[in-house]
Image 1 (spheres, rainbow, N blue to C red):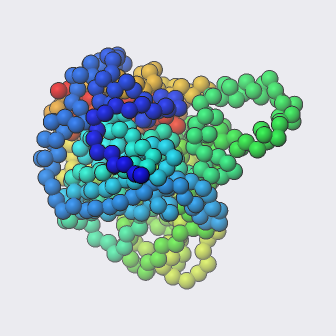
Image 2 (image 1 turned 30 degrees about the vertical axis):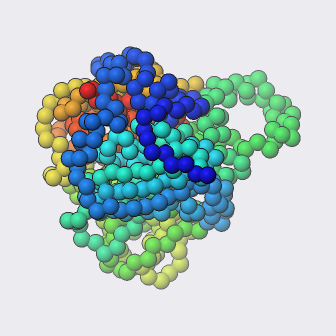
Length: 527
C-alpha cells in the first residue's frame, strides 16, 4: 500500500555514501550541534536560524500570491530507455528521457505530485527557482526523503519566467535518467520567434556494461592515489591474474588526462560512454524541423553530472538572450560553454538545409549531436564538428544583465569567503577544507546584500550553484544574473545576491560527484 508523505517536521535517518547531498543527521531541521562556519561569517547554533516550515517562509510565500493551479503527476520508476540504438536499464520519470517537460506561466501555482516507485528514497529539487524553502527538495534539510512506495506533494508559486529544470537531490540519482526541463513562460513575452526548441544535454553511464553512478562514485572515492598505487604494486601481472568475478565487473570510469584551456586545465573525472541531446546518442540523433527563415528560440540545459558542453549550431550564429532564466543584453556568438546546471537561451534565424547542433564534451574528445532540418539534403555524420565550435565564444562574465533585472548598485553588507578545496588524488572535495555537515550553516540576515567570494584552491573547475536565489556576477556592475557559475582553478569569483528568501539553502558544486563527496554547505537566514 502506498503512503503519502505530508509533513516536514519529523527527522529521519538514512545511510549515505560519503558526505551525501541528502544528509543523514540527528535532526531534520534544527536538532544539530554547533559548528564552525569556516568563513568570515561564523556559523551560529541551528536554533538561531529560520526553519523551512517557519512563519517567515510562509509569509514570504504569501507575498508571492497564488495564481492558477497547474497540476502535474510524475512517477520516478525503473525504466528501459532507448538512447538511440542502445537500450539501458535506468531510473527515470516515466518511460522517457528527459522526463516530460513541465510548462507553466509566471504567476501560476505549480502542484506536482511525485510518486516514488524506486527501490530507495528520492526527492525533487527545482533548479534555479526562487521558491518557498520547504519545497526546495533537499532531504535532511528542507523535507523528509520521499520513501520508496510513498509520494510527496510539491506546491509553490512560480513567479519568474525562464528556463529551469528539476532533478533529485538524493545521492547521485541525478546522474541516472531522473531529470526534466521546467519552462516558465512570460505572459508578456518580449521576444519574437516562430518556434522553440528545448535542448537538454547529458553525459550518460547508467546501465552501460553494468555501470551505475553509485559504482562510479565508489571508484572515484578511492582517489587517484589509490588507483595508481594498485598499478604500482600489481602492474600487468596483477591484471592478468583477475578472477572470473573481477572480469565481470564494470569497466573503470575514472578519467585521466582530459584537459581544456577553457576550463583552466583538468576537464573532468568521469569517462562517460555516451553523450546525449534530448536522450539521443549521435548515431540516432533528434531532428528538429523548421522552415528556412524561421526564428527559433533554443533553450539549452546542461543536465550532466561531470561534463561541460561547448555547443554550436553549424552554419549559424546565436544571439544570447538569457542565462539561467534571466535576460541579458543581447549578444552574438558562435559557441557557448555550459557547466553542469547552467542554462542559456538563444535566438537563431534558420538557414536552408540540414545543420548539426553539436555539443562537444569539453576536454573529453567526444560530442553529443542533434539536427536542425529546414530543407532537403543528407544529414551530417555523428563525427561532425562545425567550425563554429572554434569561433567566437561568449562566457557569462562578458554578458550584462537586462536592465529590468539588473541588481541595483549597493555595497555588500556581508562577505562570505568560500574556499574550494580538495583534489582528484584523494577525492576529498570540500568547502573551506570541511566536508558538508548539516550542522554547519553560514548565517545571513533578511534584507542584506551578500557577497559570496569563491576562491578555487584546486586544480579543477567547479560550477557553483546557490539554491533559492539568483546572484549577479560582481565587478563593474550590471553583471549577468545567475544561479550557477563556473569557478576556474586558481581563480576567485565574486557574486552578489539580495537575501530576500528566508530559509536554509544549499550552496554546492554541481559536479554531482564533487558535491556527494563533500563540496557543499548551507546558508541559513537568522531568525
